[in-house]
Image 1 (cartoon, rainbow, N blue to C red):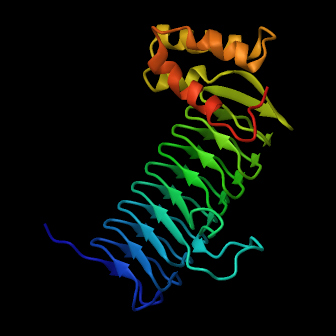
Image 2 (cartoon, one colour):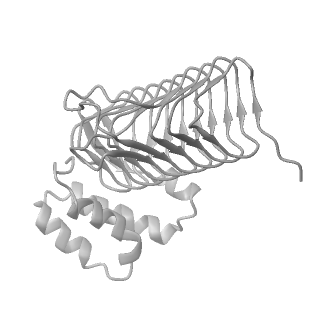
Length: 261
């Protein structure tokens, strides 16, 4: 099969940049030094890619997005830091993603199959998993970890160092300043737990028994007035559904800022 890369003559590409096969680059896009772009990526007009940055295959980046820019974090003094992006991601208009800092792991990392809607911001040293949706103007600050299948609604704001567990859901305009456990739906300013992300779980193939087990664990954690260690003891007693409850258990055990309650 014939392969070719299409670069608009008005694009500016540094000689050190590496572009894979079947890459399309629109006009007035700037791809800087030490940037690698994988096969079958589509980079629309007016995009800025700065390095060191590695972008995987089948990504689409829309106009006015900037990926791999220096962080404005005042600790950053021009050290070599990185942005690593997986495959099959979509970055809509005006998305910004900054590289890491040496005070963390010196890299920002994004997984695969994510959708970043218009004007989303991903701060320095963030780790974003797979299959996540970040809606318009959602903003995650530095050092944030996002699991898989997370939904961040429009205009949500996340405090530095917060962790968001897999399958969690954050409502529109919410401000999250502590960890959001897996499966939990939260909303408000500051965000408070509301229920489990039942619709999301159904869409991803969780059966009724699994969802019921997650809902029971949620009620133990949030509705019975128990201390956290007491709630965890009861959740851990459910051996039959330990596998499905493990993401919730891990997100509680691994918290550093504490979970929202």
